[in-house]
Image (cartoon, rainbow over all chains, first blue to last red; front, side):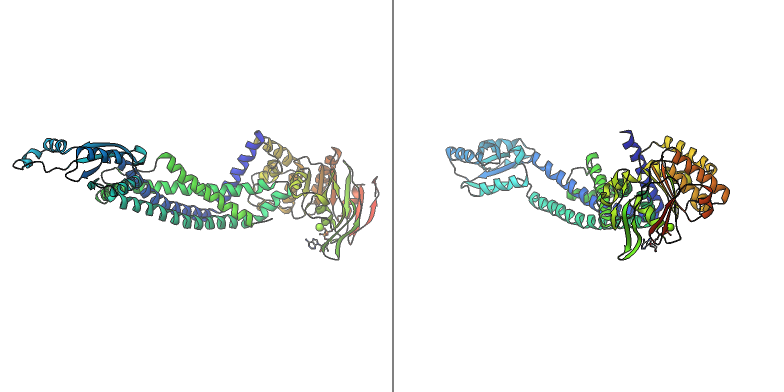
Length: 299
Length: 223
Ligand SMILES: Nc1ncnc2c1ncn2[C@@H]1O[C@H](COP(=O)(O)OP(=O)(O)O)[C@@H](O)[C@H]1O
Ligand SMILES: [Mg+2]
């Protein structure tokens, strides 16, 4: 155990020395990783916020299906019954014409509007709420389809027709984020593996000497893996820092534009776990890049 | 070493049909003109090169058939003084000598203590924070010797270890290697310094154009 710790310390020192001795190349590698992760992170931030809104949207989702005039009480109950059998539906409440009228009267200015009107102009309706786990744009779609096929329903309103388009935009952002991420990750891999390879060549003599005095393959190679990983992690931290600063500088400026995208939900930055993912993503890219360089290099 | 040949280029033998046996604690000179194959012979012994023919048993292991992953373990038991020193240019003298111990995972404090003692023996303790480039040829050579000896190897291979030393220092370094042999290390010193060989009456292996032409005079067993 002690021996492992000692060797680990030596390897870390050697990795740091490696970065020091090729400071410019290492700096470029770190900067590249930081820029790539910055772009990926910015995309992720947009997606996370859009997704957050989508997640919240269900909570106050209320669907109202207005019934045609002239249905009997029994027919109305039957309709309510049938709607409640739709797989995504949690609860259905039948609101009769009379109840609708009373409700409207209770609203501000409602009584005044109804003054002078003869009879009851309001239709009966079904108040529908979805099962909590189905309060998604998809769940809403399923309900809409089911209601379409039911005779006796005049009109459906949920006041959030925009949500499907929004969900599409969010998934488009996510998909293009993945595509961009893949391209940037590949570019980063190339840059890191190139940096590490240059380091390997620059220190070839040293590595040969280490091998001649009995250093194992791991002892010779591990510092380069560490170096790549470290470069990646530093790049990740930098990217996160810039994103954080940018987020706090830009969000107040863009209040109105953001309100358009996010409604009245507050834009949020990455949580700790998400931030760590970005950093370890950088570290992972660095590790892979240096692994690729070592595999291409034989001695 | 049994009937060992080595050809870097097919047909051109750097060593041809060499057989010899060196015991623990034995001190052996390896002599011969430049190009006779001294360096090649030493390199075979720590698996820096593989024999083209024949078998080589070092510390109970057959080098001809040694797996690549077993090479580091062997080299940790063999100290080598290279003809061109092979010092790490970016590291201090202290670090250069210390690598031998670093690779086996010895704690830093212990490494520093041992390195200091070793450097004192070669008279370079005051140079321990210098880099090899700022040292003279002779000083670099002594660093190389210190690195080879600090791990208390079972075998010491030295390729022209006194080539850059003035006579006084040569004697000191030779004494150092002799005392290693006294402690049980098998020591092989390649040299063409006739004076040196004559001063010490030790077993002498003479190579000529890759062939072992003389093995004597001290009590050596030949096969
Ligand atoms: N790496 C090599 N590649 C090809 N030929 C070599 C190599 N090393 C040594 N030789 C040849 O092998 C012969 C013996 O060389 P060497 O062992 O260095 O002799 P010495 O150390 O006695 O001067 C020489 O002819 C030399 O040219
Ligand atoms: Mg030679």
